Length: 152
Image (cartoon, rainbow, N blue to C red; front, top):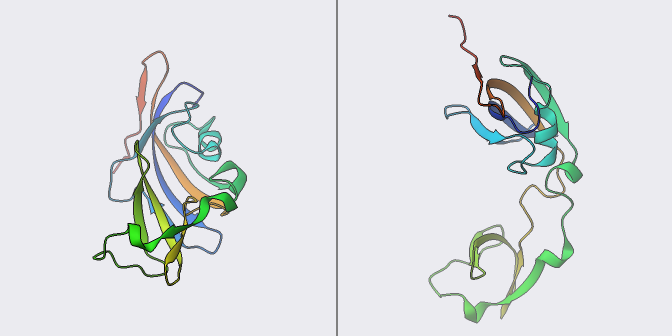
């Protein structure tokens, strides 16, 4: 059974409460991560605890255990003059800003005459998330591996 410190592989399908698909491992390798290490959102980490290889389950993760509520301080005005002319500035578009250490995607929420309003909140902030999970591998903290092979 999955416990903190295990490295696991899980297939998943992530949807919003209205059924909108926002991410899936379908057609890709399963997601691999160390449980309890902070590599995934808290609700996802908690959702896999106790699963056994081959188990399937659905979990609902409230926004506070996912990407939190939108932070109004992450919405700000930016001078259009600081953006190259060849970059289209359309509401709903995304820009990548660099803060010296990392690239942060920001969404354009308003275009004015001399400024644009940008939102640097995670796109899923404020959303409850639903995941269909299937555990396919556990590598226990002690290095023992259990893998699921579907019988055909």
